[in-house]
Length: 308
Image (cartoon, rainbow, N blue to C red; front, side, top):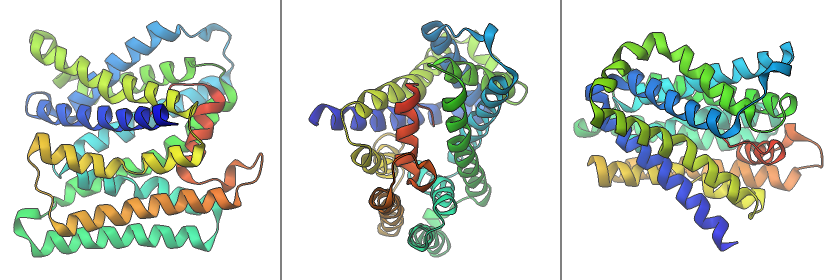
């Protein structure tokens, strides 16, 4: 089990380190330009690795992959637009509301709605901090962008499941990444193109693509083969803590006691949703699984490199 735990920690570390590097690129390329560059590099790498055989895909398979790509584009684009304005730790915590709300809606159990209320309490704490502490005020537009990213994350959970059911192997993810890159091109392309005239920016963009997409999801896939789904999901629930840590260490973003409390409440809500779903889970019933446990099973079943 120890290697699996290390793989999850490595995934969280790589993902948040990639986000920190991406933040440093925002002044040069803008958040949408960085997102576009990230999706482009990730798509190229995954297409080369997987070499999907798309010629035999049906219309249903193409529709599921296109919707998956749209979800990836919205989730990543709005998240980067959000953390360009608010701290990384707070951004990840707010984004968690999307999949947590989806888990509660799909389960229709009172206890899962209570976990969402706990996460909302965390958001209320962030609001209090923003109002009472001038240095910790959160940009409203940044918060809105991250909330939209959270909604797209919920759509991602549904569309990734559809791709897992309709497209065998790993090709669906690679093509969805390419779709996301194409969708983002009109918005982020004009800014991203400047990276191709600056080798340093281009290399950093490639690093972001590797560290934010390819490496963490490959490590998660390895972890899924070694850990119980519930353990894997609980460990992934620590992502807001990793985001706050890297925001503090690399971006010098101050994390006060109220923000730490808010992040802790979101982590507890995510863990609670996972544990609650694990207790009531029935064989063959994906609708009654917790948000992260559901994502874990979908990844394992379709043997795709995960995204998010």
